[in-house]
Length: 398
Ligand code: IFM
Image 1 (cartoon, rainbow, N blue to C red):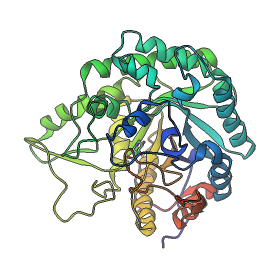
Image 2: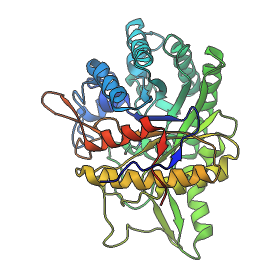
Image 3: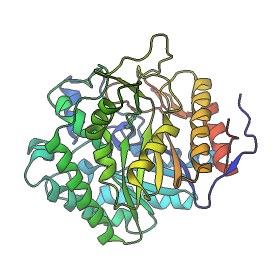
Image 4: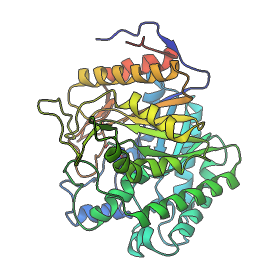
């Protein structure tokens, strides 16, 4: 077991928390496009009741607060808030508002994600992001979230992993699962443009709700590493899959880094995971240095924009591996902070074992969820990371 030895004190105001998303935890998200896909057998396993967080969210917040975390990132569900075009549910808005207020009562700062992969069925049926009025409809939804975010919320994430949406959404909605091949498919350029536009419209809508909310979006780091001689190929691979989304954040209040693993690139493109390398339950290479490397790459692209780690973690059934991975990832964070990168927070993915887009098998959670009873059981990693959060000091760097 790693000790929480005195190390690097965190900057004042540093956010230290855990993340979840609505569809992956709430359960019964029946009005969303993902639920629809699940019912049509497009993925191996449906989300069903997920972790039943739609009802058990106070337990989740209580646990995180007791463990020592000071921040909670969660998403609100567009399909619940706007179940039909232009029809906004006061009950759904009040539900999410209670989460914000309760988090504050428990001494936790809520970070609210407005869109985390799932869309209302009606929006998807009308062409989704390809519909001519998609951006306006998203902006109208964002404006309607005012009762949730107008007060007590300091950070809003407009769209989670727009680069994964642009690369994978066309394939998922065509009825296929996530591609399992090497590397990420090339994002659809039209979809990329629309998502950037939707982000800008959402930032404007949030600023109109409250100019004090700090708004950004979270990009999935591809962890691109060039083998010698493949530098140009790597830059060409990375730009449409990552950098274009980072560049779009240059006017934002912060940029979210979500880092898990790496992609090695050779002269002919992405290479398979090295022979014999340890893999996680998602099949990704276990590569904790991904976080430090992603922070440095992001800083190079966005310049002065503050960075928040909005996701980092590992899918494993062995909680000791989770601690080992996270310890090393935090070393990368500590080194980046020591080198004066402007990093304002760290959120672990995930607070709970959640629905991992087609399967419950890859467990990312700090807190286990008993599938029959939904009982929450914090793992040793939750206590270990909570102690670090409470100490406001990162373990000593390597
Ligand atoms: O579970 C996902 C999350 O929804 C988005 N970022 C990556 C996580 C792990 O795959």
